[in-house]
Structures are given as structure tokens and as C-alpha cells.
Amino acid sequence: MTSVTPYLIRAYHQWMEDSGLTPHILVDCLKFGVVVPKPFIQQDKIVLNIGISAASALMINNESISFKARFDGKSQDIYVPTNAVLTIYAGENGKGMFFETESKKTTPKKPNLTLLD
Image (cartoon, rainbow, N blue to C red; front, side, top):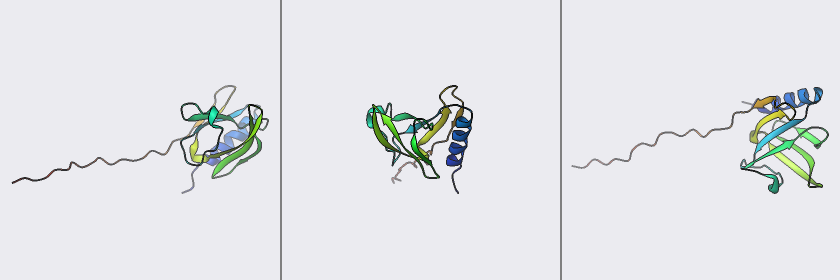
């Protein structure tokens, strides 16, 4: 089944832009495929401004968010798989949405017992 997350990211992004707010995403940098500037990662996460004034060539599709942004005056290519987005929120008031992260389901380990006679 197709994930609803990319659709919600696009909807919230558009709502924020239409409302004059600045959309930000919080990204889990431990997810496979995340390409962001390493010096700006804190506690395995990074906050990215995806507003039209900060993100050049922004593309939000069902698989990823990609754009160019400036960090310390240097243009960087950013690539974030949608499953790495933890939240999208407006920088001005914090309104937005948290997304469920994939949790690994663990099954209880059966005891390793041996019958002795």
C-alpha cells in the first residue's frame, strides 16, 4: 500500500506557503539514502527549511524530497527519502504534523532449554 506521508508533506508544505509560513522538516539522518551536509547534523537529525525562498529546485514526490540549498554560503544538493521525514512544521508557530516512524517488530525470544534425564 502506498504511504500517505508524501501526500501529507505536500499538503502541509502548500498550506504553509499559502499562509506565509516557513515549512521546515526534521530528518532522521540514520535512514538509508539521506544526503545532507554532515557538519549540520545534530544527534543524528537535521532541520531543513523547505520554503521556496530557501530551497531551490524543490521536488517533493512519493519517494523523496530533493532540492538545492545554501549552507555556509555554499550550494548543496539535498536528498531526503520520505521515510526519513519525522515531522513537517511551520517555523513561525510550530504547527505541523509528526509522522510515525517504522518500528521494527520484535518477537519475544523463546528460551533455549534442553531436557535432561
